[in-house]
Amino acid sequence: MKLEARLEAALSFIRADVHVDIGSDHARLPIELVRRDRVKRCVIVEKNETPFALARRHVVKTRLEDRVDVRLGDGFDPVSVGEVESASMTGLGVRTMLGVLDRGGPRVPPRLVVQPNDDSGLLRQWARANGYHVADEALAEGFWRYPIVSLTRGGGEDPAYDGLPLDLAVKWGPHLLRKRDPALRAVLLSDLRRLEPARRFARPEVLRDLDLVERALAFTSAEA
Image (tube, rainbow, N blue to C red; front, top):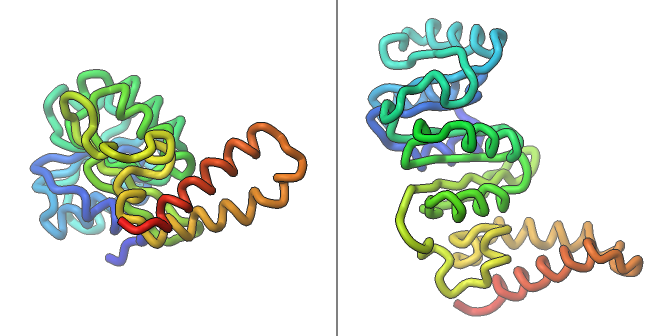
């Protein structure tokens, strides 16, 4: 099964005995995780009946019912504490993801892979406030460039941010910023083109965003 680039990138960050994918819908990512032996067993959680039924149909069609368990419920509610080692959420809005994580409590596992459809900086803020470190990151091509963030529970300050401008690293990703990732530079140049025409209106929020973009571009242009 060919996965979209964003799901392929998410898959590359996942390896576990038992994994849960929340909001899977089509079940493509869990099915491929099992087929490629990235996980031994996968749980799918769907909140509504229609995507729940769709996921079950896809799992049955691929004859993987013994390794992929589809459950109906809200976020981590259908998962027992300690049952899964890692979790993924892809293709959801960041505030939806944050709500799932905040409601998950002790059911949230130590490893997370998240692909929000909007501001990944809010997820990094959540991670810093909740004892998770940024283990790895990627930007995947698609309708736009999708951020994929791999998080691991850890103690103390996150070493991924060492030596980096904190506001830039939280917004765009410490690993992407440190690597001066070409896909990140493309995102920054696109943001600059979008924001530059509004500079003359001198709206504080536009000037703030422009400052962040210009500083990030300067950082990614400098020699390592």
